[in-house]
Image 1 (cartoon, one colour):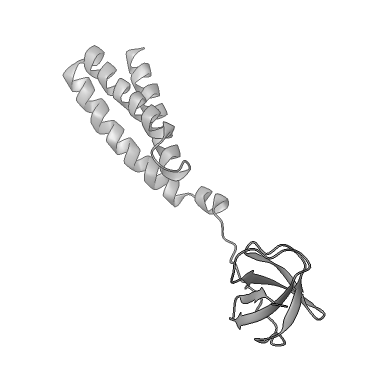
Image 2 (cartoon, helix red, strand yellow):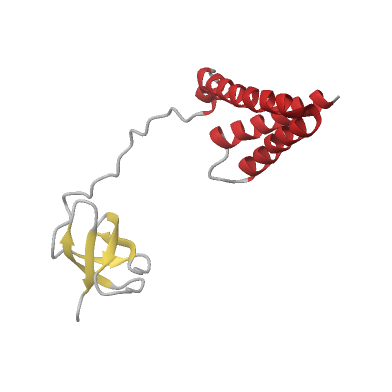
Length: 155
């Protein structure tokens, strides 16, 4: 019965370590519980089975942990749960029809980013001077490949 407790505690400890290494991020419950189970197993082996039983438990626990880690790595289980999809999308470039000096109307509040309509095109723009209210006329100050900077048109 003593050996059963030692083996079960060791296996539970190894299972929690495997969960921590491969499935749970960071140092969390898996390490704490795994350490408690493995430590309890070794302590119980030393206290009930003697020095030889404790050393055998310690060595066999290390060997079992190594085999368990390599077994999980070599199994196809990690391939089944890992993300394998490639991201092939890109951010669309702004149309070439918007140039510095073009005037448009703010469709949403620019705080500092919002929607602006230039003619028939609606694009996302950034205000260079803070907040711009809805239906305010704006002018393009700068066109970069990934943002359009506007300012309020002074009347």
